[in-house]
Length: 350
Image 1 (cartoon, rainbow, N blue to C red):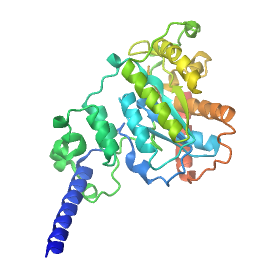
Image 2 (image 1 turned 90 degrees about the vertical axis):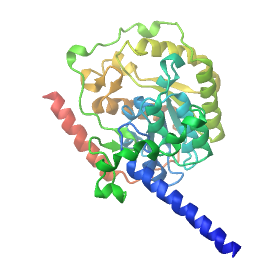
Image 3 (image 1 turned 120 degrees about the horizontal axis):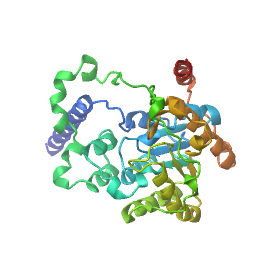
């Protein structure tokens, strides 16, 4: 009798958690900028070669389809809009559970001083709602949110329950849920519009001569050290990357350069390369057609940065990546991207 009673209790628990998982899945909206955990978990284990981590500066700038074609290997952009360096650390811990990338490219915008980098509810939901429940997820959430306020991050249904009226038949059966407003390629978002020429300015040629330094706050610096240790533990080469932008406000190009100055001694001591793609702006390779706003590239600009990254990787880490092969069949995705890119390029030339 005890065994039957125990089995019944277990079945009830399984039914409850299954129902809760279903409710969370169907009521959590597909938002532009959410970490694409569902797609990432579905990748074949241990096939990833290059992983990008960071905020919107990643999913607007580094296009894995372009990089995969150039290097004939497998890259992925695992990011979420508005997240800080702490979130990047927990994303990376989760990412290493199923993949063993040879290179981790960490975008540095989130390393800016914490006063400029406070998290609110939205970024935390973007990065954690679809992450699998685990001690890593629990630690990540509770490191930022008091336990009495944490339920909505573990059970998004508690704040999304009012979405019933917006659900379709397909949503109820978890069939092909995808927002129609965006197209995504391995975590990278297609962005078709650009800033008008009148709003675009090229940074002064000599701004990189500035030797002033900005250091991350102590908490962010500790997180960077934890990321370095995590990459070493998992046999991954860490690289710092800086996405280009022509904006001076909101921690713009000049402050990003000073942040790179501040981090250079640490990076050199740890064998971490820093690749700042503002150089494409200064060289005249990027113009107004390449930016969706003063801090983010559009698809034409992302194509240029992604090709430059592939060249840097091929030149710098040729030996490290020797033997890596392209394990994912991206032919259909690459063909789709090429069509979109050529249409955009044609439209902006006219």
